[in-house]
Image (cartoon, helix red, strand yellow):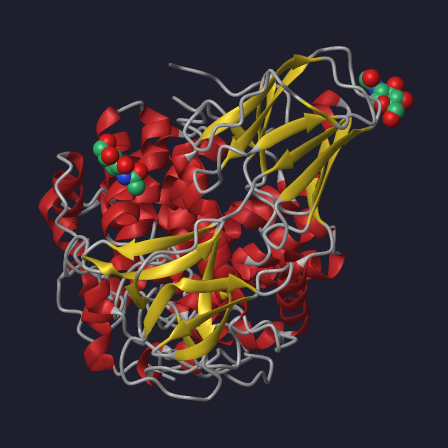
Length: 629
Ligand SMILES: *[C@@H]1O[C@H](CO)[C@@H](O)[C@H](O)[C@H]1NC(C)=O
Ligand SMILES: *[C@@H]1O[C@H](CO)[C@@H](O)[C@H](O)[C@H]1NC(C)=O
């Protein structure tokens, strides 16, 4: 499944508020500028039985099964230590693959998330063992001929070639370094492992010394090679430590040729390798929070707005053959290699960073919900106990998950022979499905996603138990438990823009007349002195709607509430986009099963996230109008 190296380079190259002194962000040392709402620590939110929890379970199975020594092979070999007889991996971690060891950081992060949310000590022990072995690799740098702090599966000479602009083997060395750093930071943050901190800061110090020698123009030239989220992780180390040194190093990775047009709100994304850019925007959001420089905020917001508004498919994914296409070009690019999954993982990280700056806007979590349900949930193969994934999500007529262009991983990932970027980010996605359901500020709780879960809100001495079949059903209940405290607080509940004026909030069974539930706003239960047993019921009526392609109003996907529906074509292939009689679409029962008539034949429609093992159709040539009720 290796990408041909000739393709690889171009393809992958492919109001000031301080954090409250109490609370769940105790590990974060530096105050953030502009942040108005905060995530809860992963250890305080757990999923309960649901389609989401099933995804988590499959990924956790794999994380606890994979042989850790195999994952250490390239690090040990490169740092001249024994590989302990381990078998080398294949795919993008093969010993001759240019950016081998890019994947391991995702495993570190996912083990850390698994431990944080599930208190699973097997995940923790894998993370701490791995980090201890990385420390040994780093400690052998003198013998291996590397500079202090260096840590990777390929020689440091790759960086000399990168800086000299003579690197021509398809390597993207800082891309790999970024992943390792992000993984170490997560093990430090969520497991409390101080070896992870030491290895991380030593590697960050190596990045500082390597880049401090370069002139501004040398640095900018080097940034022409994909470098992941180096500005993101370094700004995050600053957030974690409060040490300004890391912010300075982060800002060296500000990529001017990308940032300048974005700061001016000019969409010049056409033709760019998409996942090369999105991590830099997350970095810009963090750099805004660290510096207050509004240019960074504008870059991140404008990039988000353009990507969501002009470059995203109905399922929330973006990119075709890994690249951005002209603004609003959607119907023209319905191919087998649409919607690279990493881009969506990164867009969701960007979305939550931006929402915390603007928590009265529902646009951010309307998008988060759309992309999580319709793209990432179904990216994982539910028939696979290790939760393997697809790299692209095909949107061609008669597309199918797990098949597609082999060069980009159109098949399902495998245990030891893939290690694609999208396999790594999916390990994270499926171990942090609880991280964006709830947020808080000094006087409020925000409910952003409708996912069965339990929140332990220590500052308020309460639990919130969310029970729902969403999106199979339209009702969610939020039950307050625990001792509580006498201080009143507000509950903000996202009322998605896809729902109707029939949306409503009830408290303890009675409709809350004074709480407005307007689509595209936050319903607010103000200043209530909550008692154990208080139950809020949220009803979000769903209707059929079309999601037209920006470039062709006669081409559209069909959705019911938040859920994109797809046609089930079994094993039949389609040579053209089927024409759907919109007026024929009918609900078949209580769930999300529908039927319709396309090309004169009856077709079953159901949630796209469940379209597995069949050829499906997402975008239709539409005729007529959907039934109104
Ligand atoms: C992007 O910004 C424009 C102008 O403010 C706005 O009309 C549009 O709805 C925004 N797009 C998204 C996806 O939020
Ligand atoms: C928190 O709630 C428990 C009951 O669940 C109660 O025993 C305890 O006194 C409460 N603590 C505070 C600080 O209110």
